[in-house]
Length: 189
Ligand code: FES
Image 1 (cartoon, rainbow, N blue to C red):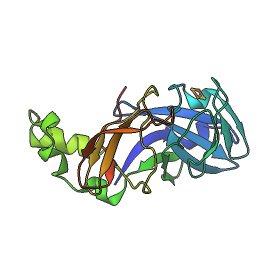
Image 2: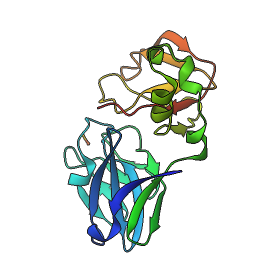
Image 3: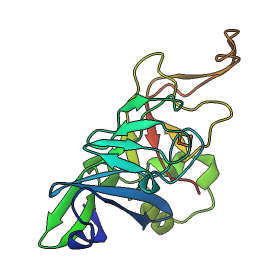
Image 4: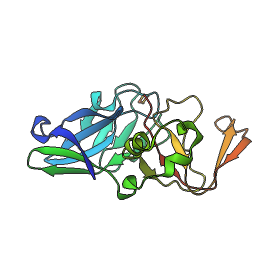
């Protein structure tokens, strides 16, 4: 399952472009003819990453200089504290498409989320088509107080804790959520 982004030929080598997919900003980098997709929203303060600098596979955020590897989304340098989502792309002729994970075509998991209780099955299926499964290591920070959010997470398996005061070295657990890993459900704007 995939979603067409646009023409690959319109992204010159060693440059980037941004596309809107169901309200989510998807960045694409052309590294010498190979295309890499990533979340265009900097996890630090939400700046558009495609407006930054691309040197090799290193993308530097235009706002405060955080650096990411566009081939896998890894954080190379802060102030951001997390990497960015990396997306697999397909090129057919000149057509560039975002490859959606297999599990994105599974339906029904949003039906149990109270926030979406008012949506019919077609609307739910449309939303689910743009979800991505994420797995986080134990202890990894997923979202951080004060940072710009760029997605909504639904806990599918595992457990997450809501902790206050982590950055100040005075952590206080406020709540434990789920019993499951997280899936990005709907990128927020
Ligand atoms: S918004 Fe990207 S480094 Fe601050």
